[in-house]
Image (cartoon, rainbow, N blue to C red):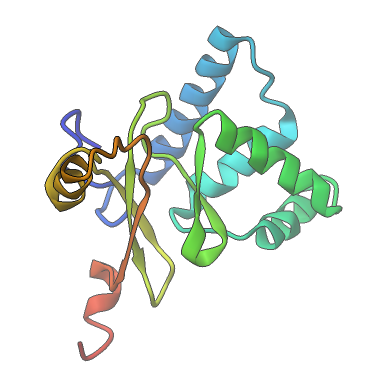
Length: 165
């Protein structure tokens, strides 16, 4: 994503291997700076989410962890996801009850997700909560927004030509 938050990551073509490597390197650096432990299971869960660029449920992640030689009990995946979400490395997509890697961890932001209803690909953009119609409505009633998560469902560029819209 660009520094101004204008270009969402997830739908455009890019060097995917570099994307995954950069995401893991950023997580490792942040954990080292903050005294957090990026255990092998946590690292693998983050790697799986970075590789997919789509939302994955805990049980899909658990299956992938089992295939990779990690534990196959649900707490293994849930503990790793809880840690990664708590520290801003992943986000939960409520509509899908699934998780996606954050495209700009370490930044305080209000994510806006564009979710393809056909392939579950997810792109993340920033959406400042104090701006736009929601911010105006909140100001009108004296409400101070602290956190928002926007989830928009539609069809991604890769799928749009596969269906009659």
